[in-house]
Image (cartoon, helix red, strand yellow):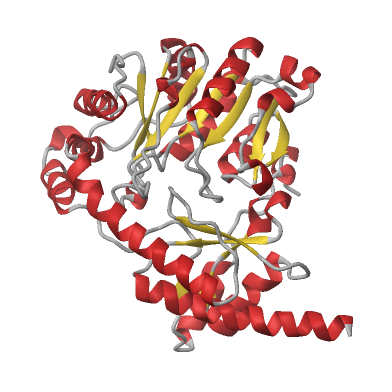
Length: 398
């Protein structure tokens, strides 16, 4: 009998794993399903980027292996974007690495910086690539709960001193998935300082940096003095340009960290499709113009969602970034039963907080992936689920 590796047994079930089959069954039954589960927007990629890809696939040279160097034009476009956006200059050849979406670069980092048994500091709830990459690399995740009372910030200096002496990497993500929390500069400054004191690599996942609202502008970690000594920052074209399935992103950091990640990837992949990188040049060189319409639409969806949630009896904080609503449930109502009833009874897909770690229990995540009217409709249905479950709780305690 074939035996799976022990590391696979340590991996938790992946969020949304069973949802596609249930969703397909409901659609076959003629149900009107509204999917607020995965962070996969319904808006199309920008037309100029699509045209750039169409032209690029006609070039036979762009169907060859890209290897880790990739398309030099794309490397240069990432550095132009970062200089315009954050005022930070990077060498396109030694301080940038094209990725097959930021997820794979995040998951591969532990292979470059962790030896077996060494700790990685992982936020919970959080993106599963942080935990999964650590476990697959043989590292030991030290899970830190993100709490509303602490603005969902992970404070390194409050962790045990023996852990900080042994930890090799910490994963941070602001604007945050799933909580939509943002990080003030003074927090980033003390976090960088702590990483420098303890020689901890700071893996900063900045996938939502351009999806911000109400005038808030998300920073790069490299706008903090000293960050280049310890940080590697991840960027993605998935969310900001509605290019989730295209799988294109990049990492930026010191030559040493980029070289280490490059070496790992040399043994696992041959880089993103070169024609995609050519289209990525078009996206990044016109990012300010191309992202603005999506950002405005997401703000309309956010406003519709927040208003509908409050009308339906939920409490919710108005997020300043990302593309999610992180919604607390009343006491006595668990997230997984709520999400299952939402899907089975009302044909609404949401992500139960527990799917993103035990610290997510008591919440659900709604992605702003459909137009405002559909967001309101979905939340009205969730309100009906909440009312029925509240009645059940009262009946059980009577």
